[in-house]
Amino acid sequence: MPQAEHFDVLILGSGQGGKLLAWHLGNAGKKVAVVERRWVGGSCPAVACLPTKNELWSAHVAHLVRDAARFGTTVDGVTVDMRKVRARKQDMIEREIAFHLQAYKQSGAQLIMGNGRFVAPKTIEVALNEGGMRLLAGEEVIVNVGSHALIPDIPGLRDARPLTHIEALELDEVPPHLIVLGGGYTGIEMAQTYLRFGSRVTVIEPGPQIMGREDADVAEEIRRLMSSEGIEVLVNSTPLGIRGLSGDVVALRTRTDAGERNIEGSHLLVATGRVANTADIGLEEAGIALDPRGFIRVNERLETTAAGVWAIGECAGSPQFTHVSVDDFRIVRDNMAGGNRRTDDRIVPNVMFTDPPLAHVGLSEREARDRGILVRIARLPMRNVLRTEATDETEGFMKVLVGSNDDRILGFTMIGADAGEVMGIIQTAMLAGLRYATLRDAVFVHLTVAEGLGPLFANVSARSA
Image (cartoon, rainbow, N blue to C red; front, side, top):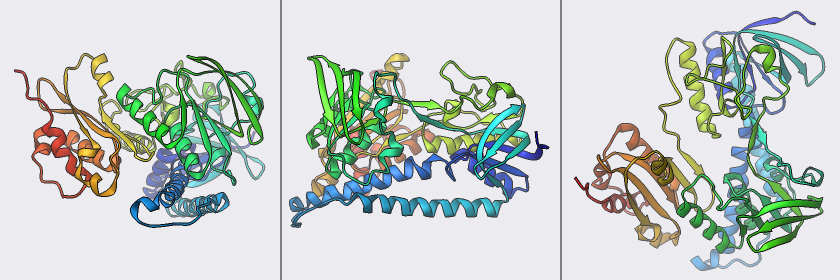
C-alpha cells in the first residue's frame, strides 16, 4: 500500500456542494483534495440539471415554431435535427468543464480523477482513471457521492438496456415511440421534451397519480396538460414484464384498471427514483453508518456517525435538488468553522421545468392535513392573470395556503408561465415573515405574471375568529 498523502480536507465526489466547499477552503489556504470518478463538476453540469434544461429548451423552441401560425407567423416545414440538439448541449458542457477546471486551478484545490474507496477512517484509496493508485488521508472528510437512477426489479427490464436520463440526453435521433417508466419530475420533463421533438410518448405510472408527492389537483392538472399535448399517461399501471431491446423494439406488458395491456415502443426510459451511491465505497471501514434506505445517516448539522466526517447532497438524504446541495455546502462550511447551522429550519422550493412549469414552496394541502395544521386556501386560475391574455399562456393555476389562526403564508403552488420566478417572491415573503396582506396590497408591475398575486391573496377568506 502506498504512503498516505495528508490533506486538511478530503472530499469524495465533486457534486455541487462538495466542489463549492473545495474552492472555498482552497481559497482560504487549506490543502484540499477532491476525488471524482467521472464527471468534472459532478452530475449537474454534465448529465443532469443543465443538460436536461438545455435540451428541454431546444424542444420548447421546436414547439413554438410549430405553433407559430397561431401568433401570426407562418413557417413551412419544421424538423428537429437531434445531432444539432446534442451538439448544442455538448458545447455547453464543454464550457462548464473549462469553468470548473479553472476554478480548481485558482483555488488550489486538487481534483483527482479516479474511483475512491475508504480503507480506514478518514482514509481513501483512489484507483486513478489514468492508472495507478493514490492513498489520501484528511483531517476532515466530506462525502458527496450523489445518487443514480433506480432500475426496478421488473422481469426483462435490465436485459432491455433501458435509457436513464443520462442516455436519453445522448440520443442523436428522435425515438419513434418513447415509453417512460415513472411519472415523477424527471419522467414528465423528458416525456414532454421528446414529444415536442416529435416522438410518440407513453408514460407508465404504477401509482394512482403522476407526481405522487403533489396534491391531487396539481397532479391532475399536469396530467391534463400532458394529455392535451398528446402524451398518453397511464396511472395505476403496474409493469409485469418487458421484452426486446431499447433503441430497437421493446414491448412492455402492464396491468391497468382495464386489464392487462401490451405496449410496443422503440425506446424505454426509466425514471422511477434514485439510489444513493453508497454501495462498495468502504463506508463501514470508515465508521460511516447508513439509514434503512441506503443513504448516509447524518444529523441536522450534516455530521455522519464518524467524527470529523460530513456528508452533503443526495447521498446524505437531502432533497434531490442542486440548490439544496448548495445550502448543504453553506451549512458544512459554517459548522466546520464553529457555527451551528442546521437543515431542519430551511424552506426548500422546487420547480419542474415543464411548459408550463410547476413550482412549489412550503406546505402542500396534504402535508397541512397530515400535520393537523388548519389553513385557509385560495386559488386563482392563470386565465385570470391579465398577462396570459396577451401571451395565450392561460393554462394552470396558483394556490396559496395561509394559516387559519394567523396570516402567515404557509405554502404556495403554481402551474403556469414563470412559475419559478413568481414562487421566488412567495419564498422571500415567507423567509421575511410577511403576512399575506402585504402581498395582497402590493403594487406589482402591469403586465407581469406576478401581478396575479394580488387577486390570488384577495381570495383568502377572512379569519373566522
